[in-house]
Length: 295
Image 1: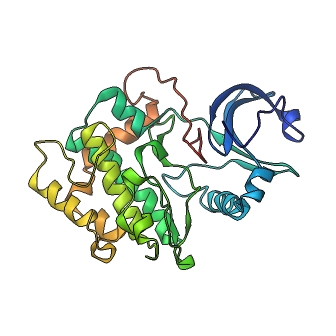
Image 2 (image 1 turned 30 degrees about the horizontal axis):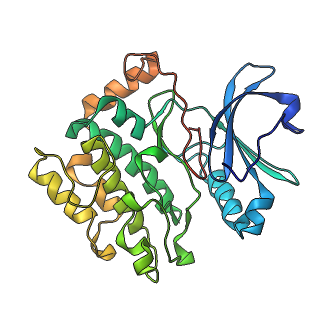
Image 3 (image 1 turned 90 degrees about the horizontal axis):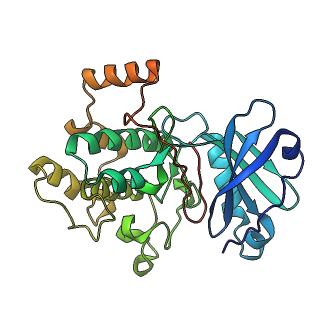
């Protein structure tokens, strides 16, 4: 059940340009539709949020912040691209490209990843987070379901419902418990959230890729991981936020250095439109709560 009621049709100015094809997903606050351009036949994802339920719950500032941050980072590498934002008297509409798959679903389909494959995705996520942190933004809800794969096989960070500026000195519970650091738990609600929140979220997302499932805690690891990987996890998931590396320091680690061969393959695949997994991808994904089928 969503706080946003289903639409029979789109209001203007969207109605003249797009038609609703189907509902892609229903979250606690939003409904996401697949829409199609009436002139070009191109399909998109349209996230719709009804404003009044957000207003009575004092969540309109959070909604406005999400839209503003997405607009600001529309050109940031490895961040979801917001194509259009429309505010009406009753709703917020955000239009995105359709994405192919999330890392959560990729792990569910193919099972635990090798260190090489997992670190390849992890590096892209880190590059996206680097762009956010460079502008003072903390995502605060990094997890595999919020790491989407676009039609070119590029990772895109989505769902900015919990995002904030670091200088806001936010505190309290946020994010998703299985992927969130101790300082965001209700027991430590007075701890100020810094960019190190995202470092922990990146680590637990990587943990999920190695396991092929949701991790059950900071010591939940598969057998066979290299010593260097275990050492990296110990740094990234340190209970002391200040002890975790910055995103720039993390990207300097040996495991995150991309070799020339991989760069060449990625460039060749994108140029010739070679599918990422050698099979047709048809899934579209919606995240719970605030996000989203987008990339």
